[in-house]
Structure formats: C-alpha cells, structure tokens
Length: 138
Image 1 (cartoon, helix red, strand yellow):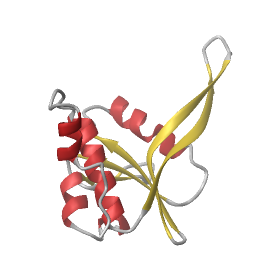
Image 2 (tube, one colour):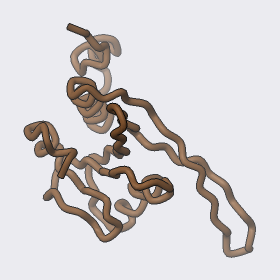
Image 3 (spheres, helix red, strand yellow):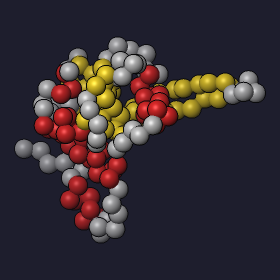
C-alpha cells in the first residue's frame, strides 16, 4: 500500500492549522482520488497568445491543474470551487480550450449539476466524482 503526503490532515498539521483554504483542500482531495484510481498525475502548462486592443501580441502560460495519464488514456482536469458567473467559467476553461488534442477535458466543481457545457467540457460535481468511480468516463 502506498501512502501519499498530500493528505488534508497532514497538510493542516504541517501548517499548524493556520489556514483554511477550501480551494487547496479540494485540489488535494481530487489529487488523492486520482492516485487511488491509478492515474499518474502531473501539472500542465499551455501556451496562450492574444492581441490587445492596441494590437500588441501578449503571450501567457496557463496552468492545467491535473494532467492524468493511465496507459493510453489521458484526461485534463481543472478544479474550481465554484463557477458563479459566465466570466468565471470562461476563466476556468481557457487552458482546457487551448489544448489541441481530443482527450477528455473536465472541470470539477464543489456545487452544481454535472453537465457538458457548450465547449464540450464536462462540468463534474465533486460529490459525483468522489462517489462514482466511473464519473470520469461519462
């Protein structure tokens, strides 16, 4: 049996219980569950460029929270505590929409229904993810 030191309790002890960052705790929970399910998990970076109103080209690197590999299967996952507005949804899916392959792209959220959005990205409820081992295959 493997033990991973991303456990929420160990994290809290390590920082003397001085922080309560629900977003980081949720990311730790997702990461641990992905490991339990047998995925190799990395953080990804995506190049993104756009032009400003002054026609100046801007290049950025966008983070992908989890790049999950299992054999020939790959899944890209973003973790978002909430997506209260369309702007927040756009922000969360920007890195995923700039990945130029056809592997599955998912945003896991704490609240809200599981559904596909207009970009074909699965918005997956955290509880559906945790309680249904086949949830990443929807």
